[in-house]
Length: 233
Image 1 (tube, rainbow, N blue to C red):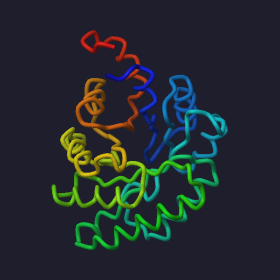
Image 2: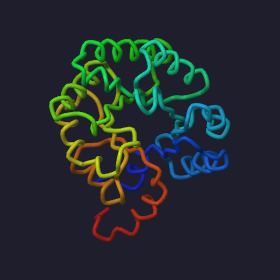
Image 3: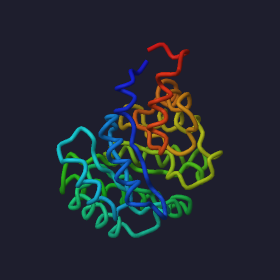
C-alpha cells in the first residue's frame, strides 16, 4: 500500500480549462509545492507563470497539454507545441493522439506521429516526461489495445486514459486495467477524469496499476487520505 508521500508524488495537480484565473493558477502551483505533487498542469499560456513560482530543479515539475483536447492538429504542429512548451519551462507533456485517424483505420499515421513526437522531444530535452492521452471514451476495446501498444512502442513514459473533457461516467477503472494489461511494464499508466473520491484514486493505484493521476481534486484527496480509517497505512 502506498504511503501518503508516495500518493502525493503520483499526482498531477491540474488546472485545465477554457477559462482559468491567474490567481487560481498561482494557488495550484503553491499547493503543488506544499504537498509534494509530481507536477502542476497548466494551460500553455500559463507555463511561464507556473515556472516563475516553481523553481527549475524542484521535485515538483510544470506540465502542460499538447493538441488539447481533440488531438486533431497536424504532427508538425504537435511537435512545435511540445518544443515551445519546453522552451517556456515545461518538464512534462500530455499529448492527445489523433483519435479520428485511429478510428478511420490509419494506425500507421498514429504510429508515425507518436514516434516523431517522442523522438523530437527526447532530442530537445531527454528528461522531459511524455504522457500520451488515448481518450478511451471514443475507442472500442480493440482500439484501446491498439492505441496503448502504439504508445508503449513509441517510447513514451505513460499512456493516459482520457483528457478529462468527456462525460464523467465515461471514466472507468476497467479502462485502467485494460491499458495496464496492454502495456505491461513498457510504460506507466496515468488515470484522469472521473475519479470522484480518494477511494477511487487509491483503487486506481492499488488495483488497476496506475502510477500517475491527474485531477483537480488532489488537495482534497490528501486531506481525505488521513481520514480513511479503513486504509491501513
